Length: 184
Image (cartoon, rainbow, N blue to C red):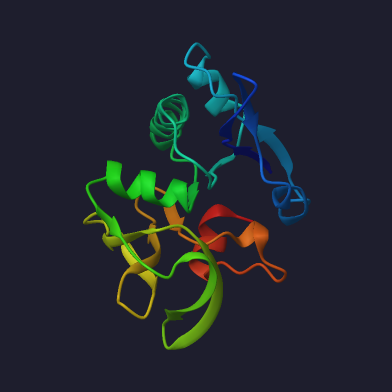
């Protein structure tokens, strides 16, 4: 599969650089990775046609990144190709589809348990936000101990989101429903 990966924007010596977490290289080693540049002047239709799925990766938010991700995600949704939001990506998708994001404590640079249909799974956490409520068509797959959504799926339009980083885990885990939807 050709998987598009969005990138965060890093600034160094007053210059902007697109950046990707190195964990993606090993996590998706079975696939061809296509790194999405943060540029508004690209042909999003052509870019969407060139990939089989999109991962909106974690990391810092920025205006140019948000514009790029939303334009590409909108185009990919019309093609009914799968999109997976990781951390920042899950929050971005949730918020733009009508869900509610809030602040949370004890989720920054730590590990914690999530509840996945009666199973307790350990995940990492690198954020101070939470999904208080998903958009109406989403199905919640995992929650934290406070009841906030940690993973959701909307198979109607081939979307999913998780707020942890599987690419940073020694033994990566995503819910089976998301693995099947995305095909990874």
